[in-house]
Image (cartoon, rainbow, N blue to C red; front, side, top):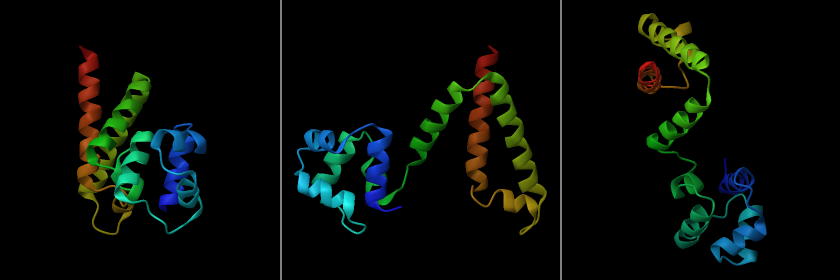
Length: 139
């Protein structure tokens, strides 16, 4: 995804209009318009910081499309707390299944295919968070 598309996505997600972004950042309207139209234009560092602050997002995500591990965990936990206990238990059981498939499947087999988008460590981390959440709520 390009900077332009991330910028548009964040503006929509945060319900920030073009005019509001200009007001919050103090960046000229012509510059903001250029960012919203160009597939290759990137902001200067000072502009990127202002835009990221205005959209309440990390500069690294805005410019590079990367999200830190901690932010992923925080987002996961926000979603987790909105789910019913039954759904969390279901996710926990799915996590156990994924870990089992990964540990018994040779490379290139079905279990590996299920995990192609998430490294084993990531699934282990999510599984740990689910386990911890369930144990805290049992008390």
